[in-house]
Figure 1 (cartoon, one colour):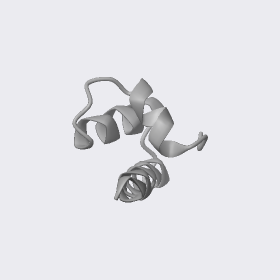
Figure 2 (cartoon, one colour; figure 1 turned 135 degrees about the vertical axis):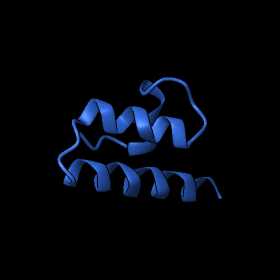
Figure 3 (cartoon, one colour; figure 1 turned 90 degrees about the vertical axis):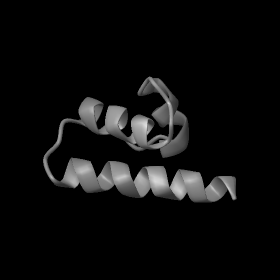
Figure 4 (cartoon, helix red, strand yellow; figure 1 turned 180 degrees about the horizontal axis):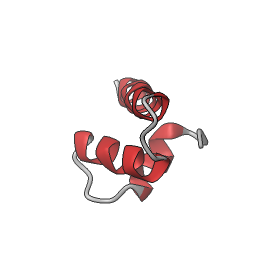
Length: 50
């Protein structure tokens, strides 16, 4: 189940970055989608994608 959160975070992040959103803004938005208040948590879910 937790793997689904990782896949969802990665998909949503890449969707935003591919739409020319800045990476830090994309991480913050994904953090919000995951229920976190800071984008640093998103690094964990992205597994090194930068």
